[in-house]
Length: 440
Image 1 (cartoon, rainbow, N blue to C red):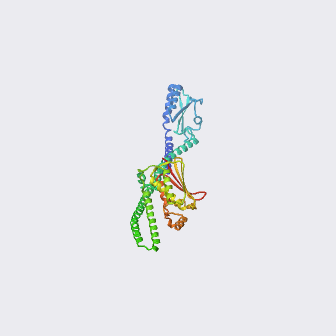
Image 2: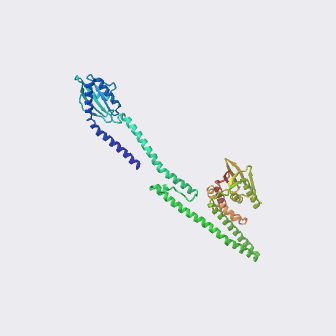
Image 3: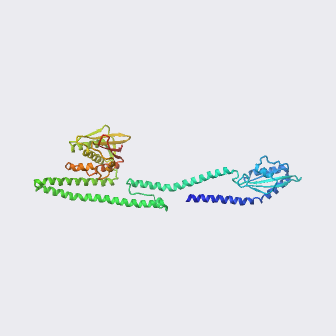
């Protein structure tokens, strides 16, 4: 709309300008009487030499020229435009000729005579400021000027519209990555157009979502803490019940103890998840040896599962800047998940390598793998493969977790360390977990 208004305004200004010039050009004929009188007086007093000198002065005038022809049709000036010469020798009329789009804007002629009575012809030419251009050239320059004008205006308009959109996009990306609270520039929020309205709506939505998620996390932490007390009392009551339990009751008491242990583990995982959601303090970070972390994880896994094989291949060590305890917990969760799903008699492979200033940790099992459609979902809390659920039900006595939180916790830890965790099915079978951490 603004562009259309500017185009209309420029067109109107040009129309008014040319109309005014057309109206004024007729009025320019009147002052030619002064030129005629001056030329005749100079010719009578100084002859042709003085008249020629007077004609030469018009070369410095930007919009008026004067030409004089003697009674033989010879011009006192050597350079005479064809339009002027044609008009001068046209004997039909002494009327002025107006030609708005030609080389000459106005031509006026009048006879003058010297003191001997010899007749000369004076032609006065008034030029339009743009008369040096012919019609195609004039239209071409006009088109080019229009392009430049609207290009500059388009650049200003695009800058005016794109700058707040780029600022809003930065805020949206920050919101998508969980960087709360979301901040939007004040100049964008104060705009009175659609962009400002969209920014204010987004700011309100982000504030409501932030409050909702914050309340949800706080509820999760509160419930997890509150569950610890009844579980502790249940454990005490269980031990007291064992004192007077009959032999046929021991099996049921063991089952109650197992379920209590699982609930305790679930509460611990939930608290870890809640803590990782709000963890933002890197002051306690230090250099951590990835080989030492993996060695500790493998040693603990071999102790907990003496019948399983855990193979560590770490030809080269690499160090990362981070929290060693969190990294140990993340790798431990992945290795435990691999031990749970690998087939009996097959090993869990743990490999450490370094490439492109990144530490690469690969943990692979030899289990049935995961459907491709579920690979990304397994990194979300409480998402488990159906085969894993069935296996968990078939092996309740092993004491594994099986709540669908292990990979989610590991992923949160890796993201907290500016890394990435990726799941993929190995071509030869089994699930492969790839962890990529920036080396220090």
